[in-house]
Each structure stands twice: as C-alpha cells, then as structure tokens.
Length: 221
Image 1: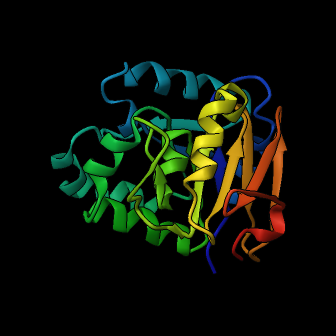
Image 2: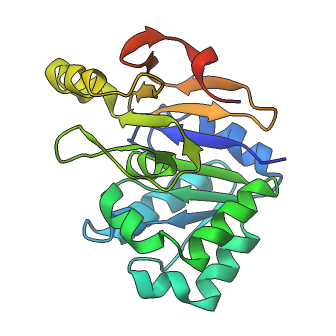
C-alpha cells in the first residue's frame, strides 16, 4: 500500500504549514529529503536552507538532494537516496523543468517506489502539479503532460493568488472527467494510505469536475 501523498499549494516551509508535523510522524522517522529540482534556476540552496530551519523546529533533519539537471537523475547516489527516503519533498519552481529532468529516469522510478512502499511524498506548487496528468501549464493555464502519479487529476497551486479570469479559463478547458483541485498557499490536499483525502493548513482547497464545483469525494481513491 502506498504512503501518504501531500499536494501543497505553495509557500512551503513557512508558518501555517501545520501539516508537515503530521507528515513527519506518518513517515515514522526524523529525516526529510528535499528535492529542489523545480527551483534549479531560482536559488535552490535558499529553499533547502529554509527547509532545514523549518524541519529543525519540528525535531527533524532536512537534507537537500543534488538533483538539478537531467544527468543528476541518472546518478547512483541520487537514485539510492530517493529509494531509501521515507519522506521526500519536491519544492516549488518550474514544473516544466522538473518534468524534463526526472521523466523516465531511475530517479523518478526510485521516488515512486519509495512512496508505494509506504513512504511519505509531498510536492509543493510545481512539485504538486507535475505529479498529476494532465498538468496545468503555467504558461497559460491550459493542460499539458504530467508525470502521471495521479492520472485524471490536475492542480492549480496558489489558488488564492490566481486571478478569477485565469482560474475560470482553466476550468473552461477542463475535460469532462478531469478532477481539478485549486489549492491555496500553505495548504495541503493529502491522500492517506487508505485512499481517503483531507485538507490541512492555512487556506482552502476547492475541487471541480469538468469545470463544475465538486468536493473531495470526487478525488480518486
């Protein structure tokens, strides 16, 4: 049975992200592997440093993984670290870069295997977007290919900061059966190992199916 999966709307490692303590407990350990791939061109070390301080306050040790470019996703030490991790966190940034780096690589396979073996997997903003398929394209709000960990689901991160026009346009373009989740910053949509979903954090989550309002029961188990 797979472990906990957290889709975070952004603003990771800041006040209001109350869900991180529960995710840490669910992992059964006190270590978190921070994957800064999506932030490769946006000072990834700063995000890792923020994560280190954040999880230190929660009594855990956060460590950054040197996975910034596609050659890194083929390195044995990177793959081994992902395979051994019980709590892996994909930070925000560019979902297109993250997808390009890890798609069809041993690193992605190791990450998914660790989650399916009961580990905790969290993705914030770009990290949440890329787990889905289709994925919301940040360049215009249409849809593009994601990595398919959650087929039939798409995420609008930082939904509290999207303009209503942009969100409406994305809803209008949604295929009839697509579950679209708008997740506020510092807020997580979390799938438990039994397939049930709940939300936690500072903001709200809204769900649509085919562009029409729905609720968490529409999400796949």
